[in-house]
Image (cartoon, rainbow, N blue to C red; front, side, top):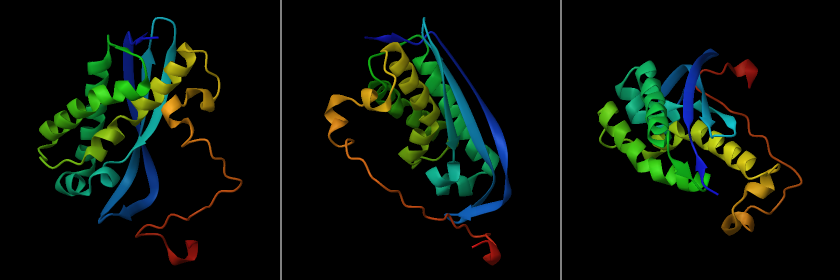
Length: 179
């Protein structure tokens, strides 16, 4: 069943970090939390994401101010919303495939980075992807994660683990007493 996107909205909030977080040769002082609304004629769903320009493309992050790098990623999200507003999709996978290259090319243009990593565009699409899956599930009467998994991927995602591992995250500026 094709789902028509009749309205989109987005916003972000800058969440300050306790201390600068360093990795990949750079430092972040805040994290941009993004929210995206996708609306069909019968439903409204919000997708959330934490965007991270440094993780996605350290070269771009090094060549611009942190705010400019994060703003570039946010503008790519906005561009994707502009593209999908008024369109229909049958699956969230198809929706993202339809916009990924356009969003990546837009990012190259606005950033001035001809070698912009595709992960940068993918990170810009996370909140949209999240909202699209929630809208898809609601429109199709799905109320659990397993129902949303497309048939070609069910066997790969069917294994269940009895335990999980926890790996502490260490950055450049973490004091020794906190390790």
